[in-house]
Structure formats: structure tokens, C-alpha cells
Amino acid sequence: MTTSQNMLNAVQVDTRTSLKGMMQRLFAVWFDAFVYNQIWEDPRVDLQALELDDDSRILTISSGGCNALNYLVENPASITAVDLNRYHIYLLELKLAALRFLPDHDDFFNFYGFADRPQNLETYQRFIAPNLKTETRNFWESNGFIGNLTSGKRINYFAKGGLYNHSRNGYFLRFFHRFANLIGLHPEEILQAKSIEEQERLFEKNVAPFFDSGFIKLLGRLPVTLFGLGIPPQQFEELKRELKGKQTLIDIYRERSKRLACAYSIEENYFAWQAFARKYDTEKRCALPEYLKAENYDLIKSRTNRVKTFIGSVTDQIKQNPKSAFNRFVFLDAQDWMDKKGLNELWSTIAEKGENEAKIIFRTASRESPIEKCLPDNLKSKFFYEKEKSKSLFTQDRSSIYGGFHLYVLKK
Image 1: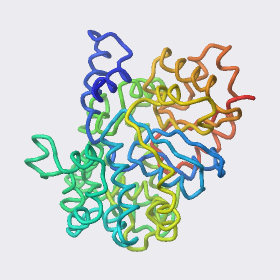
Image 2: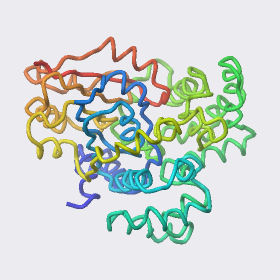
Image 3: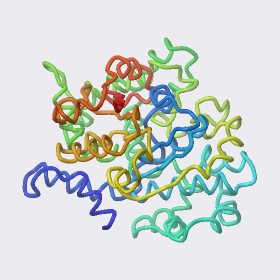
């Protein structure tokens, strides 16, 4: 089955001829591309929920691949990264090859910290390319018709314009930045703040007015606008259900943007750096994911053989493995994509094959967990919902783009 068909099967929950069904098909086509250049789930929160040890066997959706590498700091036994989107798997495989074969941390940081150095192309050809799987190398050394016209080979992203200006998500952030500049706003100024109070002041000056624009209010009503941020039609509908009184979706976006900008110190919140400047902190090197920090480099490099990658669905991956193959499950926001049938199939498979007391985490666009209303009681009773802990961990999530964080435990 092709990746495009896998994507369509994942998001098509309404009839093809309905408006929602057509939007879901459009999203499947849109998502069959390089969508995320980094992951948008905070690994610090994940690790508190997962409580990893040297017997932890993780199954995670890959996305940009950052967290699969971040988890290695905690010494898990294995990590299996799965994604319906082959582009994300190819990015993770490129990161793994870079860790294994680049000479030192400086070379690795040039590639994924700066991600725009001209010498990265020579480094790639010399150390990484010969050690990639054929299909992965072919991916990075080719491009689509429009991509070839604008950037040439995809590997050029790491030298021309920078990786963090590319991908669907990167293009949309770049568009929003340019529009903000056009109306006299400079969101990147937030990164210079020295305190939470200053972050709040700079948010009100350079970000809040962005949401008052009539153009942005219009875009915020369109589900297709959210495609660029990787938000499928189902998540869009969940967000709308959360509206109260005269509140609009723009109010939700404003609230979450403010939390991203002001709730956590800008000095170490690398999600804010990416959102407001499309880069990491390459000078002080504090606002970085763990896998990019020099102090973790040798440790992560020595554990890359614990990571395996697969293109496909997490449900199929669990089914194809023996019982108790996994005891940690990381589903990102995939539960929002699924209908009741898909959710029941996934959670029935976990109940059947997961190890006792396995931990399952995921995020949602809205506050509520779909598991509570979509699973029948006999299946739901096999899991314990850590509701209070989930709420507490949600408040610590630096990414701030979601409405809820959820932790479940498979009962003995």
C-alpha cells in the first residue's frame, strides 16, 4: 500500500462526497509531503509520564524524529519509530546516520542546530550519503517538480535557506512571519527578553496585534489554513467544540501563542524559538532539544543502534510484534485523527499485546480525551486514566500548541 493511501485511510472518517470527507481527502494529499522539520511535543513532559528505565521498549510515532533521539538520554532498551509519512522516517534516518558517522558534535550541530551551513553538503557527501539506505538517499538527493525549481535536491535544505525554513510547517510559519513584518510586527524580538515580564510585554507588542488582523481572522476560520500546521479537519472540529460564548478560534490561537511566548523562560524554550524565529538558540545553546546538546552527544551516539524505523501505522506495528514487545506508547496527536473504529482497533490491540502496566501518552487539540467517550466500557476498563497527573503535566508542556495531554496505564 502506498504512503498516500495509508494517509487517506488514516484521515478519511466521513463519506467521500460530504464536505468533511472532501476536506479529509485534501488533507491526506497535503500531508503526503515533508510536513514537520521538528517535532512539536515536549519531551520533558513525555519523560515524566513515561518514567523510562533500561527495560523500556518504546513504540512512538516519529514525526520529525527529535523525541525518538531525545528519549535515548534516559537509556531505554529500544525505540521503534513509526510514521505513515515516509518523509518523516527519511528525516529520522538522516539524523541517525549523521549521529553514527559524522566525526564530531560540531559537524552534527552544523547539520541540525544551524541547519544552513554551506559545508553541510560536503559533509553529507563524505560521511552520511554512503551510509544511507538506498531509498533514503534517493529521497534526499531528489525532489518534486516545484521543489527542484526552487531548491534543487532536498539535501540542499541544510545549506540553502536552512532546514527550519522548509517543510509544510516551515513554509506556513515563514508566511506568517512575513505577514507580521508587513504590518509592522517583529515576533522574533521576544527571544531577546530577559524575564517573563519582558516576554509578556514583547508579546503584547509584537504578537497579540497579529491576531487582530482581519486577514488572519478570515484565515483562522478555514480548516485548509491549518493544514500547513499539520492540523487535520478532525482536530479543527474538536477545536470548534471548545468555543464558549463569543469566543472564536482566533481567541484559542491567541491564548496558546501567549502561553508559548510567556509561560516558560524563553532562554530554554526551543519551541518558542522555532515558532517566533524558525531557528534554535545557536549562540548560548540553551534553547535546544536534548539530542542537539553537546553534553548528550556521545551518549546518544552510542545508543543509536537501539532505534528502528518503519513506514506504516502504529496499530499494524503492534499487531506484527509478539505480546509484550512494547511497554511504552507515544501517539502524539494521532487519536484526534481516528474515528471510533480506528480507536477501538488500536486500543484493543494494546490491551491484547501490551505489557502489563504499559504507559500510553498522547495529546489532543481540545482538553478532553477521546478515549473516554469513544471506547466501550469493557475495553476502557482495561486502562487506568491518570487524569490529575495528565492535567499537571499539560501545564508544563512548553510547546503549548495542544489543548490536552493524556496518560493511560494498561492494568495488570
